[in-house]
Amino acid sequence: MKKKIIPIIVALVLIILVAIIGFGGKILDKYTYGKEWADLDEYFGVEEGELAILLQNDITSHKAVIKDDYVYFDYDTVREILNEGFYVDRNENKLLYTTADDTKTVLFGEKGYSDKAGSHSLEYEACYCQGETVYVAAEYVLLYTNYAYERFDRHLQVDTQWGQKQTMEITKDTQLRVRGGIKSLILKELEKGETVELLEEMETWSKVKTSDSVIGYVENKRLGNFNTITEMPIEDYVPKEYTSLSMPGKVSLGWHAVGGVAGNSTLGDMLAEARGLNVIAPTWFSITDNEGSIRSYASKEYVEKAHGSGLQVWGVWDNFNYKNETGADVNSYEILSSTTKRQRLSESIVNTATDLGLDGVNIDFESLTEECGVHYIQFLKELSVLCREKGLILSIDNYVPFNFNNYYRLDIQGQIADYVIIMGYDEHWRGSGDPGSVASIDYVSNGLDRTLAQVPAEKVVNALPFYTILWKTEGNKVTDEYIRLNNVADFLQRVNVEPTWDEATCQNYAEWKSGNTTYQIWVEDTESIRVKLNVMSSKNLGGVAVWRLGYGNTEVWELIAAYVAL
Image 1 (cartoon, rainbow, N blue to C red):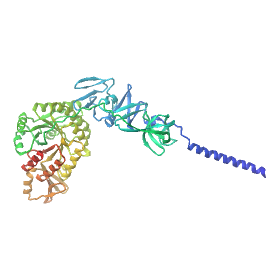
Image 2 (tube, rainbow, N blue to C red):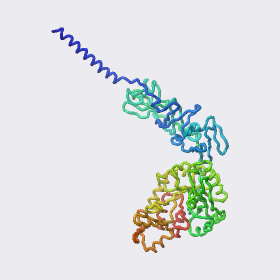
Image 3 (cartoon, one colour):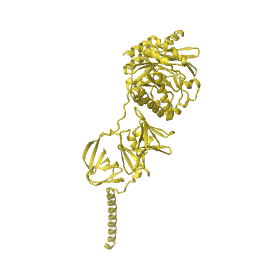
Image 4 (cartoon, one colour):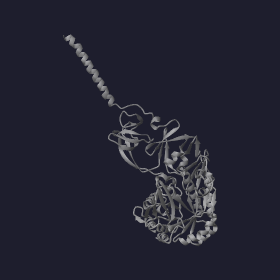
């Protein structure tokens, strides 16, 4: 009997031993540090010839490349994370950078750049084009940008901000891992005494960055000697200061709609109407073709008469009047996206203004597409340099700002222009088929608030509408017509309608029917203009403009004169 039991006991013991060994192996495996290494190319997301870009403490989706042992960024990366001031003209193979007083120009593939001082050589190609991509040398970007970069095998550390950082010391040889956890893949070995930057502290692991800018995780028990370091900012590049010209007090500008040379003779009538006016802006100049040629109704005699009446004259250049009058094919993108055409236009504007003895330039480019935005801003930058050289005031007309038109870049205009004029009307416009106010008080006030978030108040001029729209609705058909501010009272009297004050819009409102037609009008008059001027005064703006001279009345101009005198 005992002989039969012994083999059974041995078998049971062996089974138990195997189970213990298996369970112990699992326990041992669970608490044993993983030894598998991460694929660093995969970790940084790079292929041969690429360098991942770490911006501060984040691995970005951007890549840098190496050419002739120099680091290059693609143009979009430069504009997105380093300096959006660079401008590329792919048709003319040029890279431009415009400061407050000059434009630096690089030809693709050239080891140098030019400006008004002449040519300047470099030891590297400032930029080059490969396929559809333009690359800019990191060293060339440094000439105009305060940033730092450091190159490693697979990545580039880029810093644009500086402050305080926390560091810790490695207290025992260990590994930097992709994630917190002993089984996570290894990124690199860390030696005792090595210093790392502490990015995020967790319960048992911390996120750190090594001296060669590899970001991963280390066990907290391997970290000690916490320290705080104040970083020294890079301030090697000192940008040229944008200087501005300004009126001695508030601007009071009136646009003088001149439809031909004969229209200049109405100057006296315009001045007889206006009180408190100190700037007159005749609509003399309009682009006529895709080369940027200009039609002019300008008159030196007009300028002299205006000066004799104590007024400054800011000539208006637009991109739409000639096209509207003749149906000509005028494509603003074709002009502004060509460096040659754009710069020729800027020079023409400034030379014409100087020859006429104008005090300023007023740019009224409307209906630009988003695609055109970057080229328009480059045009304004280049024009501002020339205006500054000649002592001409540069003012720019703009729609009320919204997200959908932010490519007009009021923030940049606020730096480079002397005055940013907001056309505070056309909330509802003729032909829109949408009856409503031309300029309700919320539309004006909120638009100014969005502007003031981007432009210094002393540079902001709000333009008032000296007109309103009569809306006519018959079934689903909506038609409209303009009514001048100085005619609206007579019109309402003729139709025997008494408007009532609408607190929501801060305008007098009237609605009536005649047959099957419903009429609506949100009136611009002395009362509505007074409210707008009060709001403008509370925001300490740089002044007021009106569209247009000849549409106002004595009472409204008295309000403007009082506003300007404040």
